[in-house]
Amino acid sequence: MRQLTYVRAETIDEAIAAHGRAGAQARYIAGGTTLYDLMKLGIEQPAHLIDIADIQGSERIDTNGDRLFFGAGARMADVAEDRVVRRDYPVLAESLAKAASQQLRNMASVGGNLLQRTRCPYFRNGAGGVYPCNKREPGTGCAAIGGLDRGQAVLGISESCTAVSPGDWPVALTALDAEILLSGPAGPRSVPVADFYLLPGGTPHLEFAIRPGEIVTGIAVPKTDAGRRSTYHKIRDRETYAFALASAAIALSMDGDRVRRAHVALGGVATRPWRARETEALLEGQRLTRERALAAGRAAFAGARPGTHNGFKVELGARTIADAVMIAAERNA
Amino acid sequence: MSDAPEPDRVIVSRREALEVGAGIAVAGLAVPAEAQAPAAPPARSIGPGTTLPLSTRINGRPVSIDIEARTSLLDLLRERLRLTGTKKGCDHGQCGACTVHVDGRRVASCLTLAAKAEGREVVTIEGISDGETLHPMQQAFIDQDALQCGYCTPGQIMAGIACVREGHAGSRAEIREFMGGNICRCGAYVGIVAAIEQAATQMRRS
Image: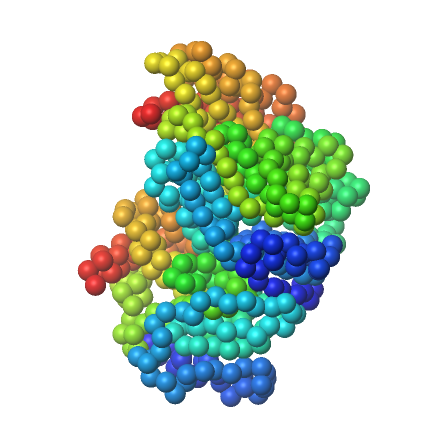
């Protein structure tokens, strides 16, 4: 790993100023569970680290207003354990509790987690590795396409990249229409989570709608009665501590036994957190049955483009949605 | 136990002093433990620089040492401070062998920049026994035969202690879920879960 400088910032303004002084090779670091890992692989090579984990007040969690507010510095473990979040928005708590290990959840922040990078093995093969990767080194090609693609995405892929968006929390936030709050040299702004994640297209190295020098300062989630009838269902190769093969974030508002409003987002199968509007449309206004939920789940994959070894994700993904819908529906509002 | 090093010797061995010269200074070696402040000092500013003067507390003792900014807490513990009880397994946060406590919370020391320990309290496997008296979790690992090769054991024990303190040892299923970040290639999981159950009962009593 190359030599680098480190400084701990105590305020957002201090961090942004330090980033401006340090220039293009500066990176903010919070928990470091992604960035430091990728630095060890030579994939990230910052010359300057500005530590924003201890910015005063950045760990604030506020569930009292008309929106849930999560300070970007709040640790994943703390949001996962928050009493109100667990009771009223299990989809959020479960998406965090089913991510990583308790060690990493104690380190990683909910803001930094939004910027987690893909686990595509060809991407992680490392700088100077034998396999090309358009995300790691733009224009070199994609070894995953036609390669060992069991874990790759089937939705949102391009000729340049099929890497899966790795997160769980961003999928839950996508289902609930969260806003990402940012602050940078040009001041604060907010971006709907739907616009925060970019499709790979011909530029898979561009992943997030975040500008140079900007910091994620917080996450706002509009309150909804669908929160109580919600779940994050995650299917993995092992029972715990693994990335999703397929996952579904579901939240339902019901009128009696009919679905009034369905929030559905998918993980593990797409190149970005994936909102499944087709599924939502097929559920809304309907009485829930397992058959109907499965048909709605299948609709999310109508445009799927599997590769050689990941065709199973189409059926697995549809069943994951169906199971999740039935789990959410049985929860007491 | 016999392989638990004397804290003083660990913190600044003659070899360490020779290697890093004036870069390391340890405060309070002559101060009895009970005279030391019980709480970690508040985090203070650190940096900027490629070399940083780090002030932290490790296993209850103040440590001041110059570090490279890129150094991991794991490498600081093992390579500079000779606290080799904490193990390097994958070095990528995937195996749990490097688990230590920072301000009472379990973390993967391999993915923790050493600079982040500034002003904090670090506890390693060397810091949990009371002299020759083992921590209940250590004794439970012996009683339940919770290891074979032993390489993952320091991380398992540190994670297990945290698991109990967090309130996540209420059932075998919960223990398995919250110990998921600690891999045992020998497959001693049945014993590990039993050990944490045993220690949890004792830790709740005391």
